[in-house]
Amino acid sequence: MSSITIYHNPRCSKSRQSLELLREHGEEPKIIEYLKDIPTREELQTILAKLNLNPTDILRTGEQIFKEKFKSMQFSEEEWLEVMIEYPKLIERPIVVKGNRAVVGRPPERVLDILE
Image (tube, rainbow, N blue to C red; front, side, top):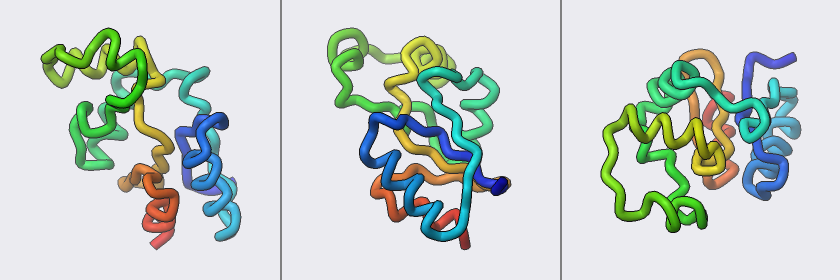
């Protein structure tokens, strides 16, 4: 197994494309279906540190649940983490992690940066 982990949603075409790109390059990543195996606060904080991003940077603001519940809300970073744990569909996907680095696979070709 590879030292690469992908936070994956199999229903998402970009996530599927990113996984396929990794496989085409000889990697078989550990797959975490984050809608079923929801990351903890600590895991999200670690991922964000590796991405060098804030919670709002990986928030899917186009999702219906965001528009209905959170569009006009102002939260702290800690509060946004709680929102993402309660509603993991709001976490951008896919996120690929290798060692101390991580990338968001949008567009899917960005996951190849993790192989360098």
